[in-house]
Amino acid sequence: MAEVTNNTNSEEVVSRNFIEMEIDKDLAEGVYDHVMTRFPPEPNGYLHIGHAKSILLNYGLAKQYGGKFNLRFDDTNPTKEKNEFVESIKADVEWLGADFEDRLFYASNYFDKMYENAVKLIKKGKAYVSDLTAEEMREYRGTLTEPGKEDPARNRSVEENLQLFEDMKNGKFEDGEKTLRAKIDMNSSNINMRDPVIYRVAHMTHHNTGDKWCIYPMYDFAHPIEDAEEGITHSICTLEFEDHRPLYNWVVEECEYPHPPRQIEFAKLYLTNVVTGKRYIKKLVEDGVVDGWDDPRLVSIAALRRRGFTPESIQKFVELCGVSKANSSVDYAMLEYCIREDLKSKRPRAMGILNPVKLVIDNYPEGESEVLEADNNLENPELGKRNLTFSKELYIEADDFMEEPPKKYFRLFPGNEVRLMHAYFVTCTGCEKDENGNVTVVHCTYDPATKGGNAPDGRKVKGTIHWVDAQTAITAEVRLYENLVDEEKGVYNEDGSMNLNPNSLTVLKNCKLEASLKDAKAYESFQFVRNGFFCVDSKDSQPGKPVFNRIVSLKSSFTLPAKQ
Ligand code: ATP
Ligand code: MG
Image (cartoon, rainbow, N blue to C red; front, side, top):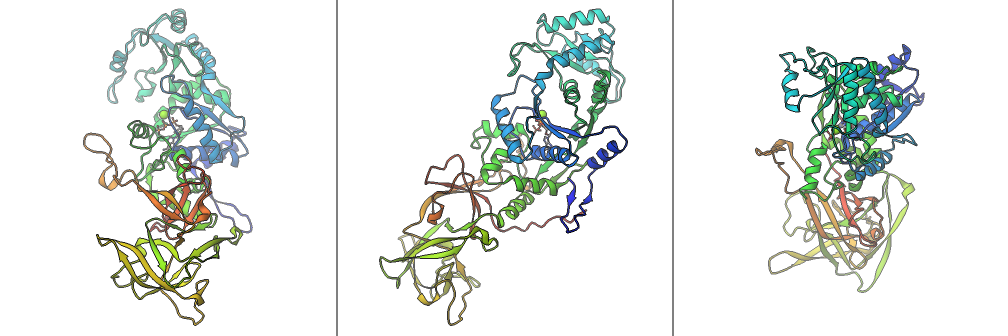
């Protein structure tokens, strides 16, 4: 996507990516007078962050050029497709903000057109029915260094081919017994052009067309026809299709589409330390390693949404990634950077204790409590203020107290004074321990004159810690995440299995959160001060009993790469 600066003169575009330059050229030369793009997922799994890039790229181009954007299910392969996937894909594309309006299409609705085009090719002497088995076909195809061999049926008459193709359609052959091949060039240096199969026999029920068809088109034949039927101008796909482009062009030309679409390839998005690729995600789901396609450790769109990512953060991420012709991996930390930046001033802060220990204020009046006011977000006053209750017994993070602190530890230890955020100064007086030596209660005294967190005599403290009121706090489950895989340690084991991080999920069952979080709704997110950004889990939360996912911690050593 183009980099855009919002300076006051609104001189906008700074640099254009190579796809935009190609489109500009096409428009200038009159090859097309408009732009139409599409996102063509195969409904055989959930979408992931890589697909988000493709969606936002295609949608963004259509919008930028005042054109149209289609969502098209590439459902020409009846074996793996499911309605569950169709529904999830629609929801994900919408959530990302790529509005396809009523421009939703199914490739399977073009089966008749594809059949007619195949017949047209036969009539032109450009396609023939083959009797070769899959194995023979491989043998005849040749290799990168050897030319292919002609199919014995290559010179069948048009009449015979028409009859045999109709017989294929009418179910007279078993799966694999016959195929329809394009008649191109067995000597081509591009193996894709050596008479590729364009139709196969497959006696299978299709989720949309039922049992109407027992022959199905191959991807390289179907895809250009789908694009051409919809009037797509720029068919944007990933690099692995580069070698298929001559075949794409052959199909739209031989099928005689008057305004044929044009294929342009870009590099796939790869992200470090995550599992992309539907096949691998599917395996993790099927093996029960993760809790479904939306497990917050995955980078499917559904998982990112459940984890607490926003569409804006993903849009920003895709924009920062840019569009390129060279494969490379993007640092996962850049995705984290984008969500932090997005939530920082947008979402309220709250106090939540992940590993609680009691703090008792020995000189605070027994049985009393008071209400303190706190800003929801200092960077964004529009988010207002909230009330916090305060009383004699609080919870603090266990690691905010140390009986014998090292140097430069400024939090609670006997004799030290710290600030309780939004509340008072307290001075630690000691602790209680259980028989194993674990601290169970920390004791302190407070200075009533420091209400609001400042001392009237101007004395300073070096540490500020967060807390929640024990009387009103809610107990909640909080889940912390690490990456599922670590590239430095190797993603795969020698036997091909995945080398999974055993610490990818930590469940904390006894977290103490401020009372205002009790009614937080699914997908709502908060900054828990000092602990990171957290989002209410949409699957496991109960009314009044939220479960929180950590989206991302607060700190990072990540810096934005310099602009090229
Ligand atoms: P996967 O390899 O993850 O299974 P796929 O390419 O098989 O994905 P499709 O449903 O066929 O998934 O792809 C839909 C569109 O998304 C295609 O145009 C494809 O090129 C694009 N796409 C898939 N993965 C990525 C990626 N990592 N980065 C950018 N675009 C991608
Ligand atoms: Mg695919």
